[in-house]
Amino acid sequence: MNRLRLKSWSERQQVLAVILMAAVVVFGLAFSFLLPLNARRARLEKEILQMRSQLASKNYLLDEGALQTRLQDQQVLNQAIYGEWTNLAQRLAALPSGSAGPTSRVGHIDFKVAVLAASDRLQQKAKALNISLPNEFGMDAEVRSTEDARELMLQLHALEKLVVLLFDLNVNTVARAEPLAPVTHKLASSGEPYLEEYPVEVEFQSRLQDFHAFFPSILKPEHVFCVRRLRVEAAGPARSNMVTVRGVLSALVFLKKPEELRPEPPPKVRYTSPLGH
Image 1: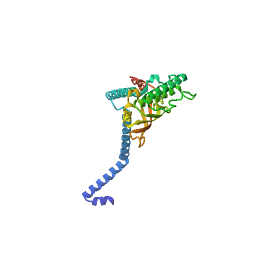
Image 2: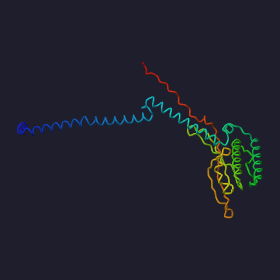
Image 3: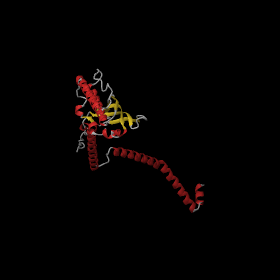
Image 4: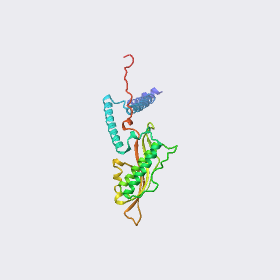
C-alpha cells in the first residue's frame, strides 16, 4: 500500500521526503551524540580557563626572563622603600634605637635623679624666660612595682623635650604637661613591636604670632613631635591676641633599626631532573 503510494508521488515529492527523513536522522544524531560532546567541551574550556587563571596568579605562565625582570623590579622597589624608612626613622626618632631599646636597663635611682634634674632645669629656664609653670610640675619620682623605669624615663624625656619646645616658642603660660600611657606599634606579620609612641597631654597659652611657629618647630630635628590632636581657642575678648592650646603630642622611639625590618629572603629553589634522566 505504502509502496504504491510512494510510486504515485512525483519525483519532486520523493526528493523532499528523502531530505526530510535525512534531516530527522541528522537531528537525532546531533541530539544523541553532539550535544553531550558540546557540553563536555564547554566544561573542559571552563576548567582550562580556571587553571590558566590560577597559574597566571602564581606567575607560572611567565618565562624565566620575565620572572627575572619582575624580581629585579621588586628588589629596586624594596631598596627604595628601605631608604625612605631609614630617612623617616632618622628624622622622627626622639631617641636612637640603641639607647632606648626594650632590653636597655634603667635603675629606679637613675630615674629619680633624672626627674629631679629635669624639674630643676625646667623651673630655672622658666624663671629666666618669665614663663609661668605650675608649682608641682613634672613627673612623680616614685617608681611603683607595676611600672617600668625604662618607660618612665622615656616619658620624662618626651615631657622635657615638649616643654623646651614651648619655651622656644615664647609661650606665656604652660598650664599642664602630663605624660600619657605609651602606645606600642607591632608588625602585622609577626606581632613583634617595632615602634613606641610616648604621648604628652599639654595645655598652654601663647600669643597668636608666636603660635604661628608651632608647626614648623615640631618638625625640627632637635624636637620632633607627632600631633595626635590639637585644639586652639581664643583666650578671651580681653586678650584678643592670645590663644589657648590644648592637645596631645607624641615622641616616637624606634625599637628596631631599619635593616632589622627587612623581610627574610625566600629559600632558594633547587631544580632537579626527572627520575630516569
